[in-house]
Image (cartoon, rainbow, N blue to C red; front, side):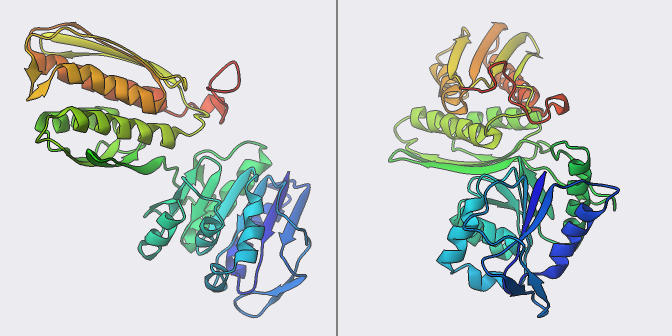
Length: 380
């Protein structure tokens, strides 16, 4: 197990020692190597204390754990292309840990694109420009990317990393020895803009069912609310489209964008349950949804309707919504209304079943310990 800590002029030695000290405790961890990595042989921290580098190399590849501290010196380095190019060579690190202002540094080097990261409010615009997804949490774990924005969280993260390495296991849910929780967040923000619609989605898989949805179609808002509330997803969705023509483009593009959000937030899908099915009654109606986050888009939809529209939306768009979602979520999706008389009840049962099936399939299975849920070892 090899770990490295990046140091630079004006780095925070407090960040450094909060994480490094637990790693050096012989009771907790056995490292093959702990390198102090720099571009020059000797650097000074923000208090003018000097530190000698143990690794001077053209790149930062090959580390199981690479730690990037914060410090006042970060602000100068954000506009230093040579330093950022050097830092970007850490892209193959098994785990990347960015602390406080070090989050900005890692983001500017392109190491956090598409990743949910802990952030202060004043950092959010810069982080988004670099392709990261900032959230206002003290600590975040997104796959093998770990970020912390305050001292207490940095300390907890150091203890959690030490415990994980000592057990030779991936870092999973995490509490440090001090009891401070390191939050695991699966949150993403995506948008889709065309000549017909503009759709923005923010999705948190590990939410509590809080939602704010505005599509211009009241019935579609109501159906998406069922997905969020019964899937326990936090969902913020805004859409504007050419409703003066008809609902088709808005329904389609909302489904495509929501599917994109699931595809992005699940990433390589390591560790998830992957497959699930759920059957939901709604008064006299019964509907079933079965899905597999297989990476292979496919949809089978089986429903009969009594009227050409439900809630002002053509019933043909119900099937189109599920097909479009499956396409961009890259999942195999089967949806069926088994029986029922009221079309509102039939549709609502379908969307409730979709929410519950998504929640089950997207759950993290601790027994997989970050492995791809496939006998092939990869999802296509």
